[in-house]
Image (cartoon, rainbow, N blue to C red; front, side, top):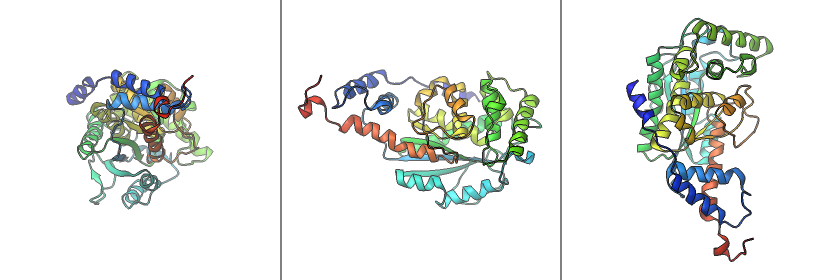
Length: 349
């Protein structure tokens, strides 16, 4: 835990000089001021993150953290728990939606077992299992505080290892049947948002199961009494191993000054945890899309993040984050490849 505190204490703010230079460059491009909207804001912040107006984003990584949840025994998901392992195998075989979108974006998908219940012997899987799934949060804490910290550190180390291989743009993804339930509990615990306004249908559950899911989240909060000022404690009491792992991915990117695009509800709750642990990490985040999952908009608003896309998606896996890669790259190309009024010989008003 001490090393995690050291990492968070060593985060540095955005490069103000690079941001000013980017803003000045954009103001000279052949277009009305502000006419490219959020692409302009994105380009300026990318300069602040990387310290460069033209960062190398050729190597892109989607980090999919996988974990299982003891709360599934409460019947909160439309799918059985073994689907976690089956879907991870599908990703490793390049058959999932995130693989399809990643191929289009020129990105590589890395699956990390941070908390799967079943051991999966596959050399393509990054095996970093902290424990074989969480305990049932409706009956007690999901894991120990130390296990939550270890899962966070797994995310940090994954980013470090991939950065050493040249990856410079990251996306967060997850796989874990039942994980919208702990995500809802974490969101309510950290923000005070009522459970009724937070819990959604996840994998597409019916009305009866939705009511059951809400009751389970309320029971988890009652039993565990998480402290909203202690994000690590919230994760250990009502969170999940893959949620903690993704929080670590965000912290690792912030430490190494690398942009990270967050995906849907679970990834956004993980990012919220990261920003509560180290507030400065928020500057390194880009929100990809607003999903249909009920609590996602509230999670984004709690960090004052505006998503780039709204496509009615609720799959997870990192699918929305990968789609947003193109927009980040477009913002950089816009800043560097558009003509200026002077170079094009166009009169500026």
